[in-house]
Amino acid sequence: MNHRSRWWQRVWAVLRRPLTMWRSSVSLRVVATTLFLSLIVVGLVGVLLVGRITSGLLDAKERASVAEASSGVTEAQSVLNAADASQPTAVSVGTVISTLAQRAGNPHLFELVMLASPPKKAESPDVATLASESSLPPELRVAVQRDLRQSWTYTEIRFLDGHVTPGLAVGAPLSVTGVAYEVYYLFPLTQEEATLDLVRRAVVLVGLILVLTLAGIAYVVTRQVVSPVRLAARTAERFSAGILTERMRVRGEDDLAKLATSFNGMAANLQEQINRLESLSRVQQRFVSDVSHELRTPLTTVRMAADLLYESRSDFDPATSRSAELLQTQLDRFEALLSDLLEISRFDAGAAVLDPEQVDLRSVVERVVEAASPLTERKGSEVRLLLPDTACLVDCDPRRIDRVLRNLVVNAVEHGEGRAVDITMAASEDAVAVSVRDHGVGLRPGETSLVFNRFWRADPARARTTGGTGLGLSIAMEDVRLHGGWLQAWGAPGDGANFRMTLPRTGHGAIAESPLPLEPSDIGPRVQASLATPYRTPRREGVAP
Image 1 (cartoon, rainbow, N blue to C red):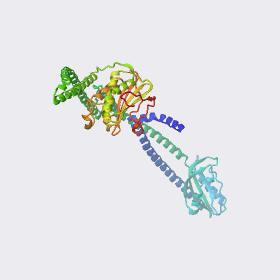
Image 2 (cartoon, rainbow, N blue to C red; image 1 turned 60 degrees about the vertical axis):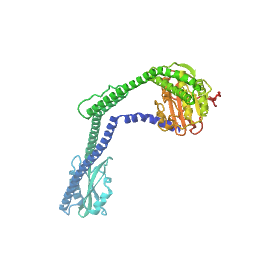
Image 3 (cartoon, helix red, strand yellow; image 1 turned 90 degrees about the vertical axis):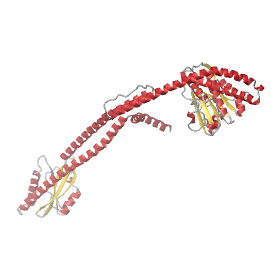
Image 4 (cartoon, rainbow, N blue to C red; image 1 turned 30 degrees about the horizontal axis):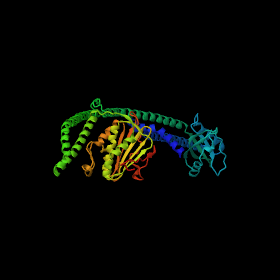
């Protein structure tokens, strides 16, 4: 199996480059298709043409040969009929055969073979011929003897010197003073064969020239069509890369020029829309930033008055006391929203910076879980930690990573519906990952790409009874990106959700793969430890093992 696999890998390595070129090149496909179809058409035409020429040559040779044989036999029979009956037969036959042999010319256009017909035992005349009697097909002799008329067929002429050539055999009966003889003309087809060879070579040569010419024409035509398309593709790639001023060159007034004009118009409209959206986004960002800063001063004044009322709520009547408590709660939410908006505005302005230091990420996780213990006790959730025994050192900003983990843990507890929350950590040579898994209602298909959007909330059942400002996961995503890491989500209805944070160990490191799977393994069995490192389950006050 291994040998077969290696053999297949070698074959695939050889075929990969041609297949890639075939898929990526329109010109190659068009030229190859034209070449293939041209070969088929030229081949069929060549076969038809050679067949017609062969048939014509053989028909002409057949007519001439039959006519020559018929004329010779008729002349010989006339001479024999006019001869004196008292003259010896052998002399008469020899004279006739000599006369017929002289008609062959030099070089011989044909060879003569004369045989006595059975059942007579007449001697066959001694004819000077270069052909062997074995050149005569038996069926030809049978036809001549049975029908007593001229017959012919194609055969192979075997000469006495041993060489063989295709030919035409024409036989006819000849009566000499009551004795039956058979005269056979053997016409070599050497000249016709040479002519056909010349025609075949000419057809093949002309066919190859025609096929190559068609392929060249197809390449030129395809290049004229494909080159502007390739230019449009390169222009579109540069345009999508952010070079909004990129345009196609318009030449002529044909369909390709119309395509270039339409593309340039589309690019101009897109550039205008993008610039408009960017301007609107900058205005919105500036508005959020300005409003957030401007609200700080009145909020501080309102907070001071609300704190005073909250501290004196025991002196108020029940309705006023409850109002002071509600005011305090809503001010807390408003301050949280304002802080999130200010943080978002820093990211939008590019003013967010890291204050990195090397920390053991296990201690950050334990600190976050301990801080969330009042919420977990109130919700009745159980937090289970699966942490490595060895230190997981990461160059990061502890404040930002603490905020990310706190947001993930709080969300998991709030949306876990009182079920357990699993926090797992694993490390590899270049990355450390932390996953926070709840077993609540989960996420519907498509929501994993929406949870990090600003102000996004799940279904209305969650919308206002749990959760904060709707900016927590957006800020968490920006914090993780600032570290060069990944923050990803998985969820399924009824199976809860899993959020995985992956950070590079060093500030300028790159992540090739996360040490933890995004889809949890407890969809079947329970959560397993990381494949990279062993775990321990710490017991802390207020945190369930």
